[in-house]
Amino acid sequence: MSALINALSTRELAEIDDEISHAPYRSAVAIDALKIVQAHRGWVSDESIKALATYLEMSAAELDSIATFYNLIYRRPVGDKVILFCDSVSCWIRGCAKLEQHIGDRLGIKRGETTADNRYTLLPVPCLGACDKAPVMMVGDDLHENLTADSIDAILADDSTSRGEHD
Ligand code: FES
Image 1 (cartoon, rainbow, N blue to C red):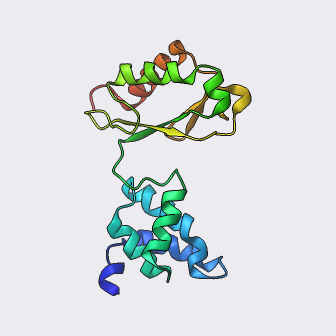
Image 2 (cartoon, helix red, strand yellow; image 1 turned 180 degrees about the vertical axis):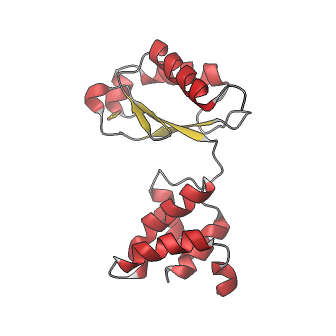
Image 3 (cartoon, helix red, strand yellow; image 1 turned 135 degrees about the horizontal axis):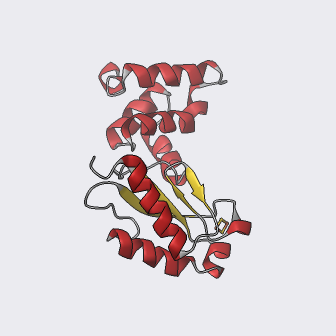
């Protein structure tokens, strides 16, 4: 058991312990613990699922099903930034399919893929709760609304500039 838990860093364990201290039982912090691991590692591996499940006193299958259900937990490696592109009904009516194609052409990837330079992963996501501003997407933590091909170009150009073109 301790060998499994060693797969988690001291910092991750401290942050998870903090969540546990406010919870009625250990497994109640499952989603927060998954988010903590993802914040440190970028995604949640099978090894991390097993270690976390042991630490939270729940089965790995149970934790895996929570992680799979919660679509902001990534169970495969992703790029530095994830582009979450809403393809639910309001965004679809307002042309998200064409815009997704535009992003894909621009970055050279399809949904589910990561750019060769590991900068972006493009993932579809159910409604982001901003239907009145459709079509919308998130780039990292930033929500972008009323998207057009031009605004997407500007968002990606700004993002490249803010990260430095020569990094
Ligand atoms: S359908 Fe896209 S934000 Fe709701």
